[in-house]
Every structure is written in C-alpha cells, then in structure tokens.
Length: 94
Image (tube, rainbow, N blue to C red; front, side, top):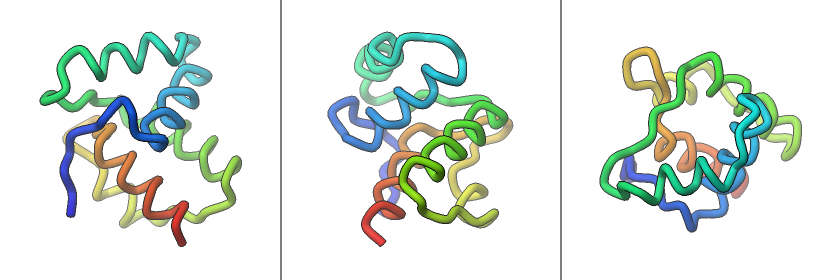
C-alpha cells in the first residue's frame, strides 16, 4: 500500500535524506527536519535530484530499479519522498 507520507523516523527516509544531502550539498538533518516539520505534507524532490539519489542508493545496496518503479514515484516534475521511501524499503527486502 502506498501511503505517500514519509516518516522522518523511517530508515529508508534517513537513507534518502543522506543521499539527497550528498547530491545537493545540504546536511541530511536539515532535510529530515523539513520532513518532520509538516508530517502530513510529502516533500517533493526534483526528478534529476531524485534519480541521483536512487543511483546512490542502488550503488550502495545493489538493488535494481526499473523505469516502472521510477514512474510510480513521480508527481509531476518531481518525486515523492514517501513513494521513494516505499520503493527503497521494498527493494531492500527483495
């Protein structure tokens, strides 16, 4: 089930925040604070940055991502942190 709301306490969200921080040069704790500041609003990551985050996570954990997986995380020109977290959690369990 896709919840679309990212919990800052989720290990996958922590991994995404860390990778996003590396991509954009921002401390991951600041990113996590942005997520925690409004828990009912999902943080959107611009698609190019989200693809870089997924690239880092696939290299780090060795899972495969398909175009269909990526399509399911998109919301317009950005990707949902909640949906990215669910994708990462699902791929890490496989």
